[in-house]
Amino acid sequence: MSGYINTMADLERQTYGLTGHTGINNQLLKAAGTLSGIHAGHDAATQTNPTTGIAGNLYNQIYGQKVWSMLNRECNALSVISKRPYTSSGWRVLKKRAGGGDGNFLDITKASNTALSDGLYGGDQLRADRIGGVPENASLDSNTDGLVSIAPEYTTLFTSPKIVAHQFAFSELAMEMAQIDDGIGDIRAQLREDMGKHHAEVQNTMLVMPLENYDPATAYTTLNAMGRNYTSLMKVVASEDELDALASASLISSATATEISHIYGTNRDDNSFLDATVSFGSGYASGDARSLTLTVINSLLRDLRIAGGSPKVILTGYDTLQTLSDLLQAQERFMDRKEIVPTVNGVRGVKGQEVGFRVSTYYDIPLIPVAAMPSTGANSSCISDMLVLDTDHLWLSVMKPTQYFEDGISNGNPFGVGSLGNKALYRTIAEVGCSYFKGQGKITNLL
Image (cartoon, rainbow, N blue to C red; front, side, top):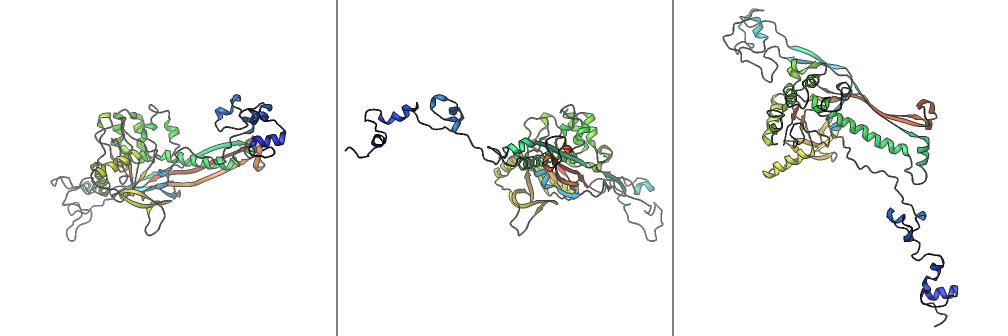
């Protein structure tokens, strides 16, 4: 069969004139000093082993240009509250009725035998027979006839704009090297995206900052520096009783409780209208934590509506949302789902449009999970708090929306940044505002 090429051995003999014998197929490889052939492994560990015959210098791992985020950086708390232009430093509020106090109801509990006086008509407690009914041809300025001059009480609240900024830099060499070899290309575009997400994530964290983090004794913070952040929703939606309970459980100091009580230029302990509707049980000690029940939630919703609030959204953590879901399904009930759209005006329902996203609801109130939602309570098993917000009266007052600034050698101005590179930053100026505290609710100390 000489002259026929039936196998690779026949081809080698035909081409190179090699005589046939055992091992003929390895003749060329032996001559080259290689037995296993030239190949490269994907595992970095085998590339560095010279005995495997892998030509590591002929192979490099290639990384795609896309940088994938391995972190959860959702910003729901920031997105669900409404945004308004910062048009004034403060606002005027009505803090007390002309008569009958500042509670949720007109107070007419004063004994009927209380002597008549001008102060009775403008007092915090009224007589049931002296709340406005007067005789025919009543005399003016007569407490006997029930006509004396009374007036409601007003006060002012103010906010200071808070500046939130994050700076980053990249050298000229880093920008150039990223566009060759196995670089990611435009390093500036990647950094702008990642730093922009970080800028939003930090603002979200400010909005749900735990009250315990305001205490220098329990956290590495100073109240002065904490005041530069947005006012936390946990601080806005708080009450004097809650702060006292936190201090009693040593979660914050008494001094910190006094400082936190100061909000929008006034103090909660002097003005009950600043107290939100807070459900924390009998205290914040470890043994005071209570299980999440429908009664706890329904009681808060009832109290909010009695106080004149109209809940628009519930913010909570994934653990509390799961607990609530298990609770409802165990009783063969199911949470409804509703389509919402977070806008600059807060959460709004959409009818007849296929936009937005669907979320669980409780009594038609959207439940929005927030990964950064804290849990308040001394018990280590506490689940995330629940914020029940009336976003008609709670907003983020924006003086300067988020802006991006960059300068440096790429812009022909290395002297402006003082280095052979670029510097950039994101900056937002805003602050949280609230015009009705009793309509905001919070449930804490839950198991």
